[in-house]
Length: 192
Image (cartoon, rainbow, N blue to C red; front, side, top):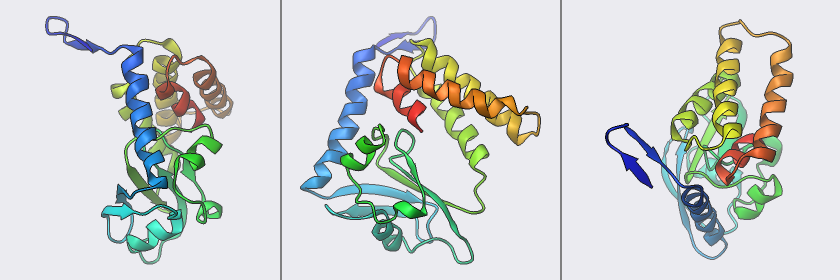
C-alpha cells in the first residue's frame, strides 16, 4: 500500500486487495476442518459464535437465539459485506466456501447479518454500498463508479425519487461490476 500524507489517501495495489479477499476465503475454507468464529447480528442474542464444520445457516441462527419474537426471516447475509444474501429456502445450506463459490461469491468479514421483515432491503443496499464505496481502492471504474451509482439509485428509491428504469440499471451495473472489475472485491459486489 502506498500512503500519501500530503494528498490524504492510500493507493492500494490490486494484488493486495485480491490477497485480502482470498485470505478471507481461506479462513472460510478452513471451516471444512476446524471451527471458525462468526459475529452474528440481527438475532435475538447477537454476538460471536464458534461455527463447527458442517454447520448450516439454520443452526447458526439457532445458536444465536433465532430471530426476534414476532419477526419473520427475510434473509441471511453470510460473510457480509462481500458474501451473499440467502433466503429462507437456503437455511439447510452448510456454511463454507463451497456455498459462496456456488453463487460466484467470496467471503468478506466473518459476519452473519440476519435480516428480518422489518429490514428494508433497499435501505440495507444503500448502507452497504455507501460503506463499501469508502472501502474500495478506487482503481477501476467498474467498481468505483458502479458502487457510487448503486448507492445513488438505492438512496433515490428510499426517497421515492427513483424511476422504473432504475431497477434495470441496477442489474446492468451489477453485471458490469462482475465482468469488468479488476479484483474479487468488485466482482463479488456485483454478484450480490
